[in-house]
Image (cartoon, rainbow, N blue to C red; front, side, top):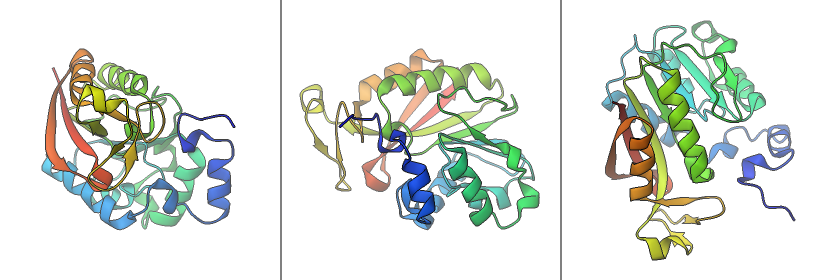
Length: 223
């Protein structure tokens, strides 16, 4: 059986899950709790209603259903590998669709960010790079830095391995998830994450707080 870079890249993954009404479950569960954590991280990072937010890997709008009522109308943008999942979240989870145009939901398979405006000031990629190899993080960082000149802060999460030797083995994270170096969910070394972030034009701050599933938060500001 072929190994895909993540479960989300398997053929018909989204089609099958959406047909079963699992648009919340397939983005990791703990829907409301995780959405509240995401929103709180952004508020602590200084997000105000007049800012323009990019939700990378937004899935079925777990964060969007909380951010859209807070932000000025039209100030929320979302990308995801699956346009169908974004549309299902829009239909099922956005209470007031007058505040969010459907064309703000962008299918994006390679972090090209097609059609997104240069006005983005805040960006969040929560539980995105935990399911992708490190070269995807590198590409995303470079693209974000080049595409959004008004960006004030990027927040993203990763799984970490404690040291180089351990990184070659499965690692049990504090929340019980087992991560790997060559298959999803992926872990990285802290020094590698920090190097990639700096090399892409950001000043990184690795936070000590562990998030759901044992993820670690990186706060990255453009330099």
